[in-house]
Length: 278
Image 1 (cartoon, rainbow, N blue to C red):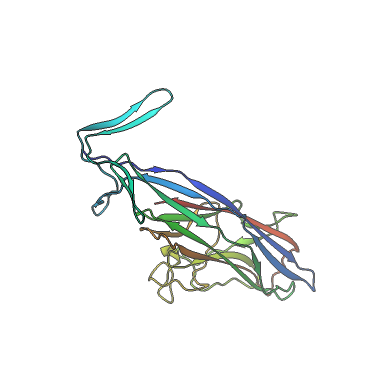
Image 2 (cartoon, rainbow, N blue to C red):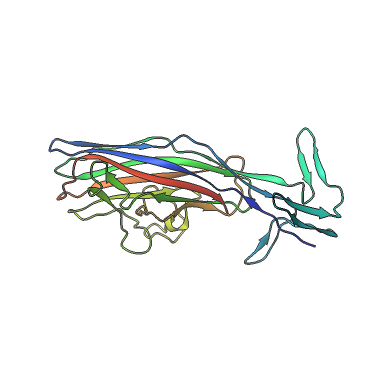
């Protein structure tokens, strides 16, 4: 009798992005990306044994026994397994073993959160310009299935003036379905974009040195996309990376064209970064 059991707990955190844009004629602009300090774990529970897999499926936890199953009442759920041999918890100086399907190992996934960012250089109110900033986060998991992370804006457009939401940086719009390898806007426009970079960066942001969503390269400040109120994949993997974890860098870019006048004020973007077991 084989049995699969995997329990997930979902966690998400809100990131605050503040942009101060002062654009009277002798103006400058400062971008402050404030990340709330947090650390969280998402636990996946499963037994450790030989993992069976096929092209489309994998069984991470299984048991050969003579009985068991789920029993429920109004307030409780019980899962039982009968017939396994030599089960339980044992340890030595260097090793810990949890034997048996019900003596499960807790698989953890955790995130080291991003820090604050100051965008630079300043953007002139008359001539326009481009300002950049970056921050990073590190995900560590010993889950053999890996993890997935997404970013989601709370408004559309994402970067809006706090005095009037009708004044905003447009969400960057790539020319096609894939992110733009090179950032570019019209001289009469302004836009706000992001680009993740790192070993675990989602395939959409990988490149072949000239096009995105193809190849295996993860190049700094390439493959730009706009934020959305729908979650967009940022980074993922299909294997464990414990104990060191993998860092992903999030690059942000705000730009105004040379013939565009952006209304002065404080511009704020609020996003949610979510990390889940795969």
